[in-house]
Amino acid sequence: MLIESLSVFPEMFEPVMSTSILGRARAAGLFEFQAHNLRDWTHDRHRTVDDEPYGGGAGMLMKVEPLHEAITDLASDPVLPRPHVVFFTPCGVPFTQHVAERLASYDRLLFVCGRYEGMDERAYELADERLSIGDYVLTGGELAAMVVTDAVVRLIPGVLGDEMSNKDESFATGDDGGLLEYAQYTRPASFNGSEVPSILLSGDHAKVDAWRRRNAIERTCHWRPDLLDQARLTEVERAYANEVLRALRATDDSE
Image 1: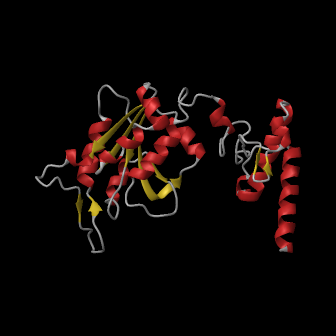
Image 2: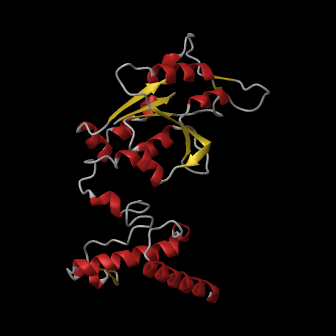
């Protein structure tokens, strides 16, 4: 997979892309990353990428010309496949694990990072899709691009040492997915009077798996009950989730 960014501040990416799991995966050739400087597609001596908005208002807007020229140029590479072009904007579809899994199926991704007060609306005509990583305001799209890149790259086969790592995690959408991940513990078994659940020390893998599944349901009921509607649950598990929810509501009502 080739992942690219188009940004006014391409230097922001290298520390992230060369560190930890991303850095090791990149060094191993499991994916490639290239950060492009939008200013390379400008033609004035100041390398201008922004201008005042028509109609007035605070701040500056990114100009359509360099964005159009850059994306068109990158997409017309005769050797590489055409990139799937992603813009980050509050108007975009919320980014989820399901979206990450879909993006991981592309051979080439191009993340276009906004700055200032936004972009000339005509630039969005070049987007294959628009994404939002949340209902809050950032100073630019670079951080959003890093978040999405991290979520996508870890889905590439071989990036994580244990192939089950992706399947067992919160929000995973595999056969057992849709729930928050179960609680996990490590040594010591006892800490400040808090004990690791004894079943996890039993060595009985079937019982451990059953406990983890029930715990994942309980944690989802407690912290993110909104996920239950889309979670893959058996009838017995759905009934158990409803029982947990009733108990939580009864506790809330009594307080």
